[in-house]
Length: 447
Ligand code: MV4
Image 1 (cartoon, rainbow, N blue to C red):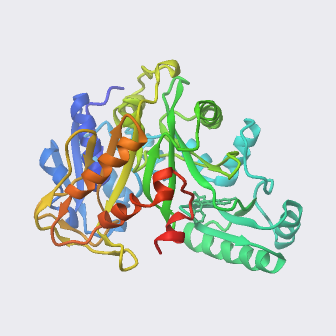
Image 2 (cartoon, rainbow, N blue to C red; image 1 turned 90 degrees about the horizontal axis):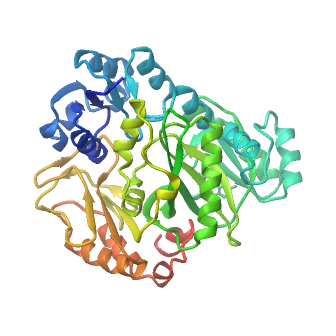
């Protein structure tokens, strides 16, 4: 069914991003907001706005009955969940489908399937996609964990099947730490995800984190839009993402893309999604998990491919066929995204919410700015501290670095501390300039 009216079930920069896509598609927008988000920029542009509750996310952006009530009152045809909050909540997707509202994302069964990382790995193995040597599914007992770890060889990594973003993970170097890690990971997983299921993999030292953007429709079409290197992160919080990855050449890109498509096809994937790989020092890549949502860093793939991912996932949700063919997709130039957070990098990244004074975004050639903030806007303390993303797109990585330096120097966020100064330091680091970055980079040089 055609989508005439869409509810944006999110906030901040991604809410504005979704609104912009809807406007260009001629779709009316209904923006929901919490009392803490009364001054959100996208509310000014929405066709209709609905206050759904207090600042506490559990009683607003995470409250399914409130969201569905707003959707019914506003008589929408679709709901876009954005990222975070309920974006990968299979139950929410199911409720939308049962209320005859298009959930702009994969089917609920697909979300449930890829949301269990142990099952997703089994799916990848069946599809012939390389995975990290590890357990054959979940570890039922401590004894099984011990036997598996000894068979693989230490060090190993214990992971929560329902985990994400590094939560519920433990590294074990011997039997003692394996047993302790097994129980600790189960306890943390039970507490955080109400699912204590854990599995095991060979630990890969200082890997790079390279992910492939995929896009599907409800007619079995699937394409990939290059890769993103997300190795520069701190405690599983991505900071800088770039495409192409400095370590991926044309042949490796084709192989990783084929692997990403194989996993997506096995999962009946029919929306925008990300297939995550780890790459070791010999440039072997291993599938580790799939994210059934649009990601913060999606603009990196939009810039190098010229494809509007948000518009395409909305059109796929409406049942339209993808207008893209794999052979038409060319990655062009080099793109790099910097996440600007209201945090103090010199005080352990302490969040610094509050009123922004003068706010001046960067601009000029090669600069995209995705932000919901403005002079006088109050960054609320209730949510994550992302205040904007600057995405640079130039012909070469060298030019991208030069433009990034210039753009970052233009950013003014009056009255609040931000991560901009840290990025300016990183851009001067010889390893980063060479593209020689793994997931341990920040801890090694900037902590
Ligand atoms: C790993 C790994 C090394 N070996 N798995 C982190 C969260 C999720 N995306 C998967 N992650 C990892 N899985 C094996 N077998 C390293 C990471 C990893 C990481 C680990 C610790 C600290 C920071 C990290 C950043 C990216 C990936």
